[in-house]
Image (tube, rainbow, N blue to C red):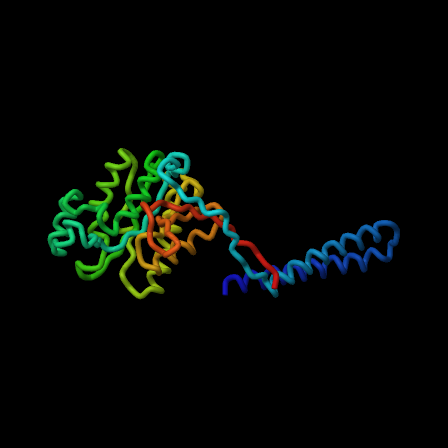
Amino acid sequence: MKNLSVRKIILTLVLAVLNVVSNLIANLTVEGGWRIIWLVLGIGALAAIAYILIRNILNPPHVSVQFDQAVPIRQEEYQRHARKGLILLLSDFKPNPGSPAHHLSEKERLELAEKGDYDSLHLTDSNFNPAIIAVTAHASNLSHCWIITTSNTSERNQSRPYAQVLAAYLQTICGAGNFHHGDGYVIPAQDDDAMAKKTYTVVNEIYREARGKFQLRDEDIVSDFTGTSKSMSMGMILACLDRRRTLQYVGSHYDSAGNRQGDSFPILFTFAVKDIEE
């Protein structure tokens, strides 16, 4: 509705200007001379501009996404691609089946997280490992990392209680830097549509915070959408539909049979949204 109102205002202004100029021409035709010729040329140019504006207002173009070449980052290239800022999406902590932490109860895991005992949780042997890889890739230049977590009314199926212990472990990787998590970076575990919209809002707020408080440009930050639900990933991707914002996914290499080969690695995605005509 807001865009429609803006279009109506622009259309009204264009028509008003055309009306004023046409009246001016009518008055000047009495005087004659070369001024009329230049004025006619001017109104012709104005009419052409008005036509383009009106056409785009009444029939706006569709958009397409132009992907740039994706950039896989291997360990030897970490320093060259390292960014100053990183935004992570974090799901509830899930140890891998072979991890020593797999046999711990939920209560025991939460107690270890509260104590900051990341060694006993074996974070690298869990679904948090992609986040650890994401941070490792940027550690040489990272100054700020935001961890967006999930919350719930129960103690289960939420990642917020694990943000502090993960941040403590990531601090050991970076050796420096600031890790931001807590009330302003929490997505309530609701329906997927609500989670997508909330994630979109929180990611945009983080970019504004980074510019205002830490003087980080959008291009200084990478947003990693690997470690959480599809709805939260979608919210982050939609928030980054800007050529200055870079997305990251921690992926793998697969053989011809679809089997994963080797270690996971970050992949950078940049793209631009372009207008297209039907």
